[in-house]
Length: 379
Image 1: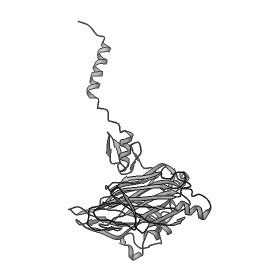
Image 2: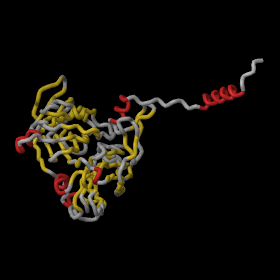
Image 3: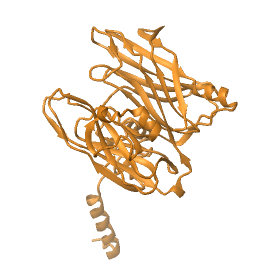
Image 4: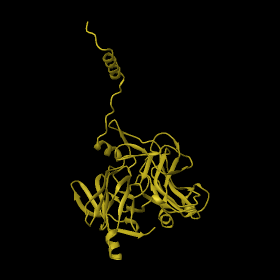
């Protein structure tokens, strides 16, 4: 009988036990998998997309990490929507009571009330005045453009998203002045067969002013002149020449960096795209995403994209209309093609296309375009 040294025997036993007890190594996510998950603001683990917990967001690496900053949180009133019911025309507000300016680096929404889409602004607390909670928007003469001018734009929700984080790169923030009120519109669609009861929870994450190197402004682009043909695939596109118009007025190129972009269509949208027009980045694709899927589709640009000197922005949507009627811009069973973005720039702007002019065919896709009108300012 061959005698083995005692220490060698112990080592072999431990190795054997270790082999039996060891858990299998998790499969790492490839860069491609992580990027695919990130398109819907999801993390990546074991080569699968995973939801990030409340209070965290997905990074390009696939990891879900905590959202930095001081969290200001609010739960809004509960809603009940019957099967097939649509609720709109209402607003809800949250008076912050902030004695100092807030520099917001991230906004987080979590909702289980079948919210189709919601837009959020901030205004001085003496504007659109009245009790917080739910109220009729018309009663206080509330509209989003006026609110954006007297206050500012905070956030917009992806179509039907139940959780979404609008996160900017470190050092970038939107300023909410002292003594402000946050207002969001209510648009609920219960497309299911059972009653839905739930609420929206909103959190803003404020960082120290000393840490902010980029103050962000919003821009909004919408194709309001949609005339989506029946039983066909179509594309609506246009170019908004905000850079060219700025340079003609100020005799210098428009300094602009893109930090965040959010597309918006309804269920018939099959594609949204955003591209650069003019300048050294002419034809650069900034966003090209398949249409509505009920997930969070906001995109963080980290690092931001420097587009200084651009001529403008070209955007558009593609649709597949299976119905035998023309579909227009609107709520309910109508469609939308629009986006909200945040930029570092001396101006914010609102751009809109109000016509649908025939622009030929691209294979079997009917193409339409129109002139874009923009309103720019430092709001």
